[in-house]
Length: 148
Image 1 (tube, rainbow, N blue to C red):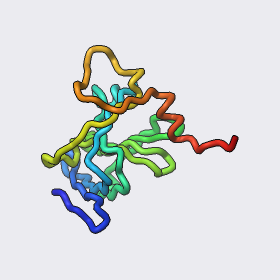
Image 2 (image 1 turned 60 degrees about the vertical axis):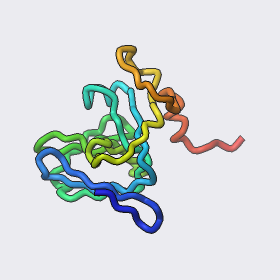
Image 3 (image 1 turned 120 degrees about the vertical axis):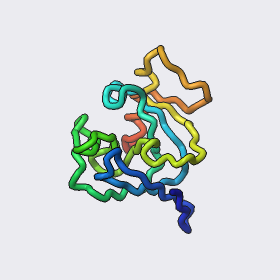
Image 4 (image 1 turned 90 degrees about the vertical axis):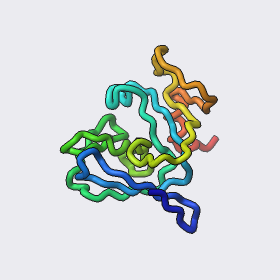
C-alpha cells in the first residue's frame, strides 16, 4: 500500500514473514541503494538493497524485534521469530536503511547508488548507471565538516 502525504513523503507498509512485526516507512522517494559491504553480504547472502531516503520508521510488534550491534556505530534489527531483516540503522537513530523487499508492492523503484563498491565481489554486476561510493567515501559523508 502506498500513501502520499501532504509533504510529498510516501508511507510504505510491510511486515516480516511471520507477521509478528509490521512497519510503516516514511520515505522521500523510491530510491534503492545497494550496499556491498562484507557485513551486509554476510547478513543477507548478497548485497543489501535498501531504501535510504527514509525519514521515519514506525514498528508494530517492536517487542518481537531483536537488535544486533554489528559495529560500534550501527545495529541491525530482525524479527526474533522468523529472522526477517527489518532495518539497518546508525545507533544515533539519524539514519535507517530498510530492505526494499519488505515494503515493495510493485512501485517503480530506482536503483541509483551503490556503496562500499570497493568491497563488491567480481561475480555479480548491476547493469544500470549508479552513483558509486567506496567505504571510505561513505564514512566521510557521515562526518561533520571540519572548520579550516
